[in-house]
Length: 227
Ligand code: SF4
Image (tube, rainbow, N blue to C red; front, top):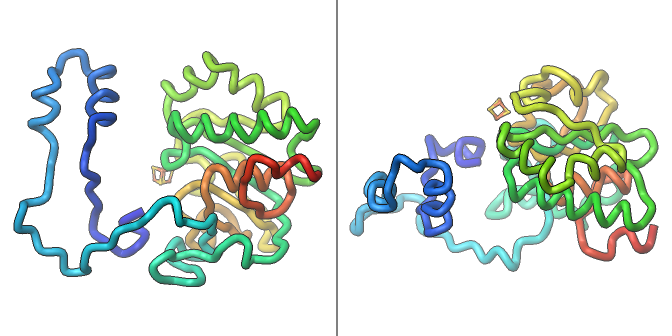
């Protein structure tokens, strides 16, 4: 999301997990070759915006308000509205996946929520369309191997092949009128980009929990036990 926060680009320090992931997929490369291709900051690099340390344990589930990925309250440093400050926001569409939130781990989160909903006897809420778009062909294969695809279909989720889809206003999952509300894990919500409706951005867990609750809802393990 570096670009959406006005940066020209963003670079993540690679770690051992990155190396292991690449080694599984690039049998033509050695670990040393992979390490040598990584980019790290110079030891004397200067950070004009300062150095910010984020404690992930302290992050509260939040959304970006419709209209701009950079929009939200409080706007800095969390850059989004906390869900428990939002009040009740009913939804019409829950759109998960895409290039941004369609990775292996994202799909494990969708499956976790869908399994909890199924165990509670729930399906996608009445009046809500729920989509998950695979981030790639290999994610689609993983989902099938893990039994997630069958689980998603059983609870009423519609699956979409990899592509840009609703993020570019194409295919299922776009809004048709300005009154519709979407909660989505794609990374852009500029007004009109995915139809004329109001599109909130949120995490994969929030999008999936909201699909079953019918309103914007943060995930926690007991969420469906009171429905
Ligand atoms: S247009 Fe959207 S879905 Fe397509 S690559 Fe860009 S961010 Fe991903």
